[in-house]
Structure formats: structure tokens, C-alpha cells
Image 1 (cartoon, rainbow, N blue to C red):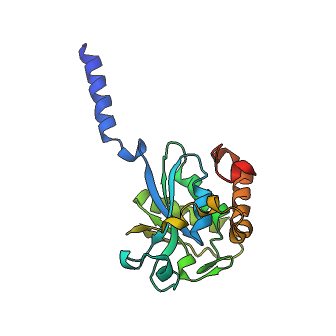
Image 2 (cartoon, rainbow, N blue to C red):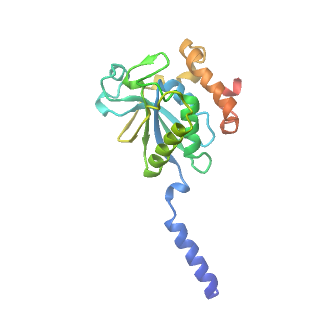
Image 3 (tube, rainbow, N blue to C red):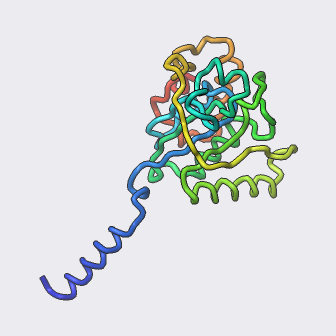
Length: 210
């Protein structure tokens, strides 16, 4: 191998070794914004999202049970853990869907018919880059006056996520005729299809039938 080629190859390998591992793999973020049934249905419909799990964040493992979380006294918020490929969907695109489709970020400790701290709007980031981008995104929404009321979304580091009971997982998919789903969550999926058709998986449950 000629010296110049060897030097170029060595430099390329050195750059590849120093590149962030997450650039080629998946990343994770936990988002809270009301009942996790609708949040899960929205985010698992997106291209580049490998998994969306309904669960609890903000409290501890001992109280991560639906009946206890429902008291609003555990510190938990109903949340969705999103595992995504940043090469196929950006964090900014996830924020677009979160703020403009999945929930109303101006409602304090409630979402639609649901009320209590467990239904708050909160982003649980897993990296400094996510934190910085989320803070900048919220600031930009404020500058552009996208909402008439102030955004109340909290931005905090993820300290723990606990998957919800099995009967909560994919609830909207398994119960599309449920009255709550029909009135509160199917409109979100229609809005997702309308605003971001290129982000929707071609075989997304519920949306593909709309």
C-alpha cells in the first residue's frame, strides 16, 4: 500500500472511531403529554421509530403502577418511551409531532378530559443535545406566538422509565372503537396524517385505515 493511501485510510479510520456512536444507532427520549394511549398511537406510527412504550416517568419504581399513579401523588407522568433512528427521523421532527399533533403544551396538569399532575406536559431528555434542542424549540414557538397561551412543558433529564401494565400497551390499536379513543385520539392520528404524511409508516395501525 502506498504511503499516501495508507495515511488517508488511517485518517479515515481515526475519524470513524471518534464519531458519536449514536449517529449510527438508535436514541431514546421519553415524552409525557396526557394519556399515554394516544401518545403511543401517534409516535409508533412514525417512520424511524423502532418502539414506543407506554409507561411512567418522574417518580420511583415502587409507585410505578397505574392505580397509584392515578392518584396524582407519585410524581409520575403517563409517558411514552420512544426509541428512534436519528438517521431516519430527527429529534426536531419528533418535537414537531409532540408539540403540534400529540398534545396541547399550554394545558397545565391536564390534557383534554384528563386532569392531574400525571397528565402534565414534560420532555425527559437522555442527552445534552436533546435538552438544548428542546429548549431552543420551545423558545422558538414562543417567539413565533404559535400558541395564544404560554407553553408549560417541562424539560428534565430522564432518571427512570417504567413500562406500564400490558393491558395499556397498544390500547388504541386493540380498542379503536373505545369511546375515549374515538373522541380523543383518532383525531390526533388524522391530524398526523394531514400535517406530516411523509413521516407516517405506510402500514401504521389505524392511520392506514383512514
